[in-house]
Image (cartoon, rainbow, N blue to C red):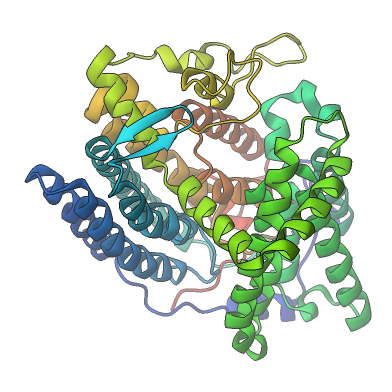
Length: 507
């Protein structure tokens, strides 16, 4: 064990550990140009249908079917571009198989008869839904193109690394893990650090993901101890994520277990069963309980609301299992269809014009530390958008948060050009950060935290301004870490992060 001049405690790797990591192989990946071409061709289908005046149900239905197949293929191909199965871009495509694929098909069936979909108190006509759908798909394509371009420019620096760094001391792993758990269970204690709290809350996800992705032999731990830490860590993470009250956070807590299955050939045959179990967990436990707890108006703690909601959920499923399950599936497909918000904004622009930065004024104060300005307004825009839609009398009275979503907010303020350029900027920053920390599984704590935040934030895009704020914080965090990191012998790149990931030798 040694202390680097950056103050990071590391444990040197044993020769057998280096050999184990360097043997991680990835099959020849599909080229990024090919995947971008597939994406462009898929987006062109609904775009051409919209351009030639096809009924909006065709644009949504046919487009959703094509996008579902294309995103599954791209997500699978992206997951094989590095030795670790998970990357921000692969997760993006797997996630939006639902949001841009299945949800679009569902929206077409629901809007066909009435001619519109509702968004709180607003009715969004089918023509605007189709236009919003194409806008969000264009934004996703722009993000993909930019991400791939920046990654290709930086990939040579990653490939130049032939040896491996030590890993952070386990005491640091445990400390940051427990600190992140505390931020999930008692977020009010960390309110003074603002956006950094959101970054810290995902630290235990990254640490446990790395722990579960390496085999027991890599750590040199006895089988009983390794399995005990595995069970305890996953149980604590899933419990904390569930109590936190976010469906996305609760489901992300399954990533470490999912990684265990993918990295152990003997367990891969359990993958279909695990996917079914995950779906059942979401529809029967996570979604109904968390949504019921959110609607509660009783002045209780979050854990008490969860307990009460669990009782109501059991009663609802006992009364009519089929109806309750159908309601949860439809609710998922409706909530994941971001283009409803984009469709509303299309109509708002037609009536009132572009906003030219009006909805992004939170960027003017987002970087003032809350510890210096305790009364600083919230950076998030969900409550404000709820009030704008008529769901509440004011932002302060909003009981729910409604996503504007990145592409829609960019269109609202700067038009179609804003969507293309803004989403390209987002994609470039995501790729830059990803190439800085490299592909997983990571051995040092800081890259673990940055990596898992990229995976989460690339799909949790409630508004463009919120994503920009988090990415800038991550950039500052990463550059500060780089500044205090020691130079690495044999690495030509000016970034020292490439030693913080378990990189295999390319042959």
